[in-house]
Image 1 (cartoon, rainbow, N blue to C red):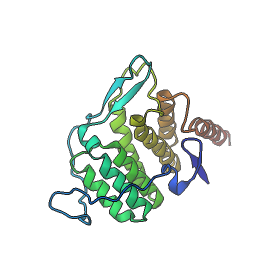
Image 2: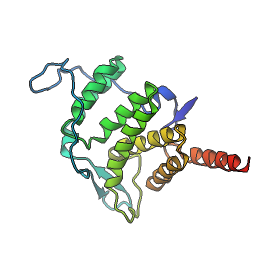
Image 3: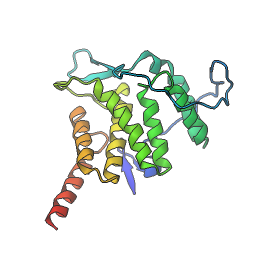
Length: 215
């Protein structure tokens, strides 16, 4: 079966990968290690909340402002994508964990780890990674709501919204329907134009829930 993100069909194994492009290969800049240095799992980094949010000029729309450590690691993330394209999944996973060791609020890295876990069929691990990315992004939103959209068309918002979609799918597959619907509702509140195509999920899941209750 296939899922959809931005309007194109994707197999389940690649549903969040969106045309990753190979860039010029560079030697990773790692203190005390070479390009094949095995990464260590990230250590707990304490309190979350490094993400901020700001209004986009005169628009009634907002964008996430990622911490400096995440912005500094974007080139490294591109190298990880090259590794994934080359089939070096284990190395890519280690590299992502290395990037998170010192920047635990790196939403895009958590999203990629969730995707890799999903490709390997580990839905519980995928849920954990997607859920962490989702929680980080959610922590930047004001409790009373934005009063505007957090549109997917803005690149800074995409990793968070894609992680939310991945989380909703994992929760549904794991039988946590109410939680899955709550995440979908949050996605639609962020961007009512539904570029990730989750409104159809919501309708289908609710219809299936009503049918099961009636049986």
